Length: 293
Image (cartoon, rainbow, N blue to C red; front, side):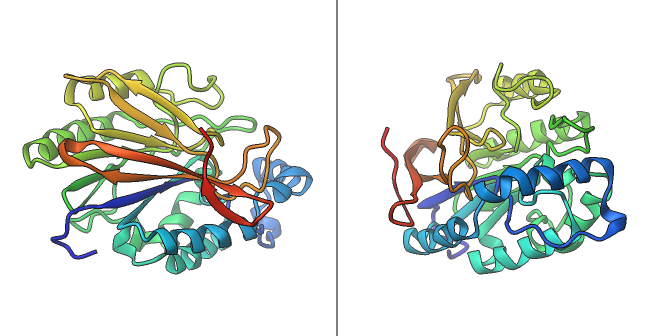
């Protein structure tokens, strides 16, 4: 889109878990990766499919959103080769400037994952000032896309996240500045921030602190992934509730709850409001269609 054109439409996708899993070198087999490797070959490789992501690329080309927000879990085991594959997929998606990208817990699978991610995906991890730090701020067509990282390495059997004090402080300042500029404020993170969304093994450690910032500073929309199912909630805001939307995994052929690939389209309306459309992958015809709600 033109730098001065108003934001018309953006898409929210998440949890690509980009298939297939590349070959793993022996030195990359840590304890957690070994378990993840087994889970991938026993179950996940049948759930997260290349053909669904190919259909998603075709779908997005047809819908032609001005921007795409991706809320993490780009990879499965946080391998360097996986991030390189993600970079190739993102180039097929469209211009770097048209994508807001944040990591998820699978992208911080082990300590070495963050460096691999930053090396492969640096062009997508820069804010408008060229800084590679979170929260990142990308202003497009009157909308401030604010990317918050909740991705931290965790132990075996855990997938929780954390924002941290430094990001919290910067987020509050960004929200205030964006409001003063008259921008519509869209906050994107991987883990759901609403109360009771996940148990302690999978939840956001400092969700209450994040909710307090939203309650004080406000936002127009909050987006998340992680749950592998559609979610919708509200957070308290300073003047009105702030809508929260979570999407399922974009690459799902079908999982144990019969959820298929899913994403949402947001049409920007006056006053910072959005009209929302859900789209789901239909395995019978191999394309995304309007979801039945």
